[in-house]
Length: 175
Image 1 (tube, rainbow, N blue to C red):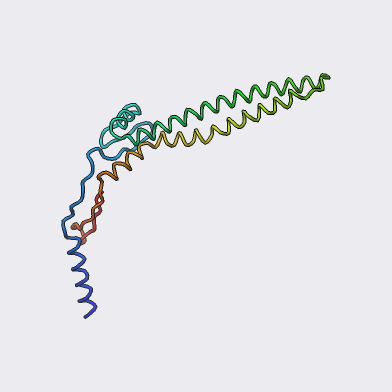
Image 2: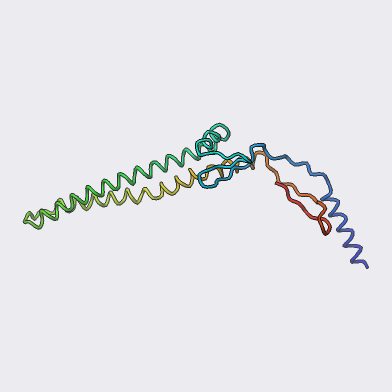
């Protein structure tokens, strides 16, 4: 009997805590942006990439800066890849001429060594482009996550409450 009374007292105290009116900050009217393929969805509005970029440029400096940094890295990665391929091709040609000269009797291996060195530089440039392309692509394509995080920090709150349910009461989380 004592256990039941203690249980009911604890239950009553708990219910009174949850029954208080929640005074939480409501979410910002702009909402959360989700990305589906190449479209960005804000509430019930679907935006193209160009519209999205204009939106974040006007409404969220942090997301715009993240996109800009990602875009610069992306372009740098493509530049490094192009320069690496060009350098590698030139190095291969110099190496090939050096091997040809060596086989016909010119026994100076300078072109072979120079070609191999230029090929190594080209390979290094191509390898360096990979992280730039990956990180730049991630920053470019996930700038909407930066926007969402800023909006969460600036006004979206999670509230808890009690609500009647089919079989009694239910605890509700609103965000």
